[in-house]
Image (cartoon, rainbow, N blue to C red):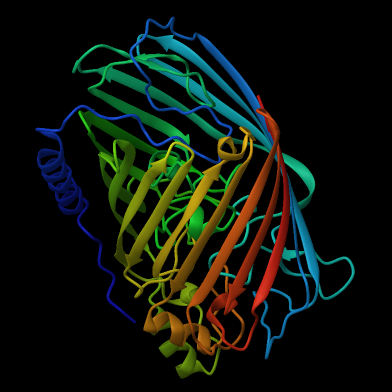
Length: 483
């Protein structure tokens, strides 16, 4: 057992602040004018980036809505063994439905308020109940899980929640003529000065602000796999639905944007309840973005991200040692005695190569000593792919994408799962380790600008990092409508 040790909050805050200043000074002082952002080839959502200068009357009230129905199926696949958090080797299907209303109102100059009530139903693929009457055990079996539309909680009947409620304050800092901002979901139309500071506070998703990518970040319109739409090793603070309380700041000068944020972790890893006491358990995130103008003037962006989770989390090695000493299965919940810092970093690249073709890549890694806290068991990940808009073949609302991902875990994590430990998403009861290999492709049939039907296929080799399980193919059908 380790001695209890509190980490000084002022020291961690000071380190974060110094990194903030250094990043901005290096990246923003002599930045050229920012080019247009890469256009999402696969999303029907209006581009939120500022457009050319224009006189636009500020939008006072915004109301949008969406509904998404995602059905996935996999057939039988070989499995040397299975555990309680394995993907079943038998044929299985699962479905999720979510409907969201997006309200926004302008409260004053630069001040906006948003609230997003949502209704959800269904489960992600996982381990079906062993007996009639038991609840489906979903969203298990693959670290790079196959549906970002599936939450870590599931219900057979519809239920409602307020997923986001936040205030956004924008400060204009000059830098040239105001640019037009198109109306969009959770974005009031209006104008924005090229140099600006945007502060967001309340309940929202960390990845609403950080790690965005125009070609792979919207599971309602493009890819579905968790380790393709986000950095696989970005263990960002979130509840079981992917939201938390916090504050973020985005400072834009020329072609550079610096983002920083503080967010509450879950009260305990992978739980519904968010930590109630501010800065008792929290995550700090810093991201530096540099917009580019490469390949004959095509827009792109490079983002470097750093994060640190500060909270009570168990070490895999401690859990294995305690389990071996007591003759029981290892459990990280039994060794959460001390507060620790788990740090990680990543690189996010987006580049338009033609007006209707974009490529993307993400590379991320984190300290694999400690258990996964709020995302998934991925300690290192690399992903990338291509997205093609339908204009190329006279289908302006269509899109096609192809991506690959490879995920891995640390040595201590391998020992923990080999000894029968359970994590956030994986746990086969044993482990014959190899990295997860994922390939995903989709075709979005845009019936109209507001409605799309997407066919998705994923091939996962070594699901849950286990060579004796799989490979497995997962087929998906997604309906999405928004206005």
